[in-house]
Structure formats: structure tokens, C-alpha cells
Length: 97
Picture 1: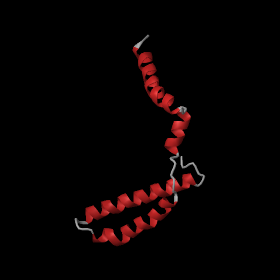
Picture 2: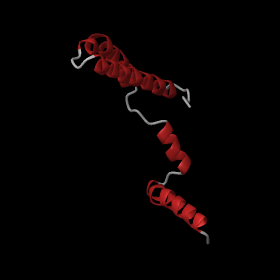
Picture 3: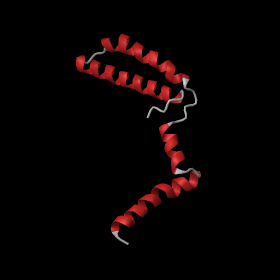
Picture 4: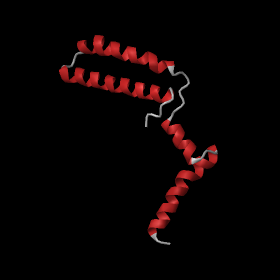
């Protein structure tokens, strides 16, 4: 046995061994759950977008700390809005991949 095949076998065994055996899920099922997480209340995502928009327009402009902090806060919230929209799209039937 060479070192490459030994390491490969160990990697597969470590990943698939305990987690697959304990949960009884295949690798495909684990990956599907990772890509499409189960969200008990998708309405939370829909409600969060207007809240984040409110913060961007009403709260961020008044933040102390200067323009770099305000720009960072706005960018982070816009990124979060985009993530929420992508996840909602996947939950509503699109794959988003």
C-alpha cells in the first residue's frame, strides 16, 4: 500500500464512517441537507429583508464612527439581504446553484 492510497482510504473512512453510520444518511443526503437547509419558518426570511432595508436607510446613516463604518455596515446588510433572497428562491423551488 502506498501512502496516497492509505491516506485516501483514511479520509473516506473518517468522513463516511461515524457520521454516516450514526445518522444512517448517505453522502448524497448529507450534501442535499447542506445545500438546502430546512428552515421551519421561511416567513422569517421574508420579514427580515424589510427590517434590514430599514436599518440601511434609517439607522446606518446616523452611526457614529465615520463613513468607513457606515459603508461597512451598509455592505454587510446588503450582502445579508442578498443571501436571504437567494435562500428564499431555493426554498420556493429554484436550486440556486
